Length: 537
Image 1 (cartoon, rainbow, N blue to C red):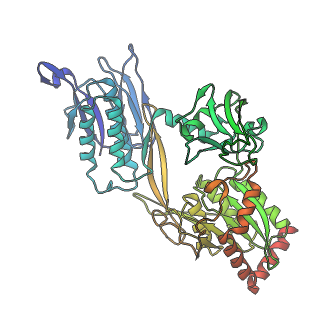
Image 2 (cartoon, rainbow, N blue to C red):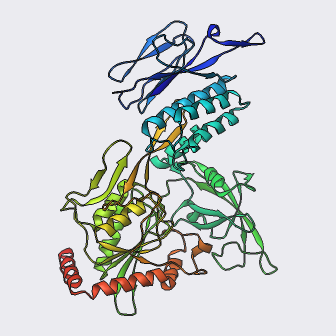
Image 3 (cartoon, rainbow, N blue to C red):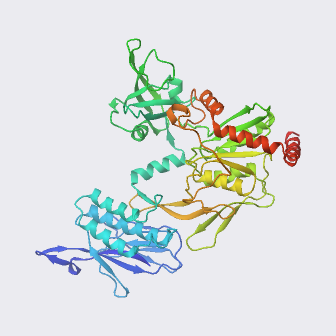
């Protein structure tokens, strides 16, 4: 059941102290067969339209005197807001007080719109074992009593948070615009990785991206950010600061930094002493599209005279499979006898990218399943490889930890279930949900969990994670780049730091031992030799 919302005329309202108070009426409406599409009926002061639903799921916009309305169809929901009474043919109505201001009434409208989408699309049709209609009524009433828009928005967020799904959420129009800019690649930046110093709260440069505007200008790791475009940034967190550094490609931003001279180059958070001085510098940086390679790859040589290819993948971006393909091909040419793919601290990314990366390691000749999707009202659907050919069948080991999530878990689960590689490390994060994004009529957006991932063998990823073939974790106190902050490849001065980490990384050592064990197997050796010969021809 979905709803339309009506703001009633004064004649249909009730009176308190001779003041007429309009009501909001929510009307159930059948949506069987409605198409998943969106139609807008717009209005201005001279031309006013009434939205009519058709049998084919479209919406007609026709002129109607004395009505003001806006309609939008998202998912299987159609909402309309009119100065009119409820049609007599309606079978049931839910009546709650309308908000006192137009601003808060718009929050009520957005709430019903979001509620309807969730009802239609949310993967858990028990709605966290709550009566979803009662939830709507109580939160709409709360908005009607709110004094400010912020209070109304908090009720909207509370309605959604009652689902107890951290990935189903509402975002404001501004946040949604930022999301679109980020995902569509239109944003420009200066190429800085920044973080708050945990002890002083200062905003420090962890590293500039190699070749970025910040790198070319001479900003160093350890520099403290003081101001942006002449405004002090004291009290801002790294996210708010990063938002000020981003902007339209080709535009400029003025950045002021403080540098402690006389410290070890690249030392983050150097301290002021008599031997060094605080130096202030100003830079005008031209924003440009900054792309960070998601891959760090190198050959590692072991004490038992083996050579393995080590590949660290930091996220599943659009470039991930392309960059990994280049790395694998180069490492094979360099004589690698096996591979270690490091997915630790990889939060995921594009599911399509995970599928492409899997095709580099798993042959698609037999149409193997990479993962399956379980939605609210259909049988699990298998996502398979078809017609692809793996780059190599050399032995493979995958490293994961508790921060390996989403697309990382899809890849690790596929490699494990297909017996393509061993998984070593810790149980992964357990984020196996798919979100769809719905733009709402006020420009805000709703992220809704619509399905779950499972591995080829049917293992539920969500809240369970991928359990490793062999357990391994870093010992407490193990040195990590930049005080435990995982540094991505391509940042100035970090490649040498990663190499130092590998030499002392107990899990990398475990992976090397696993590869050596498998290489000693006659069947593995014969297959690998054949594949290497084929690849090098």
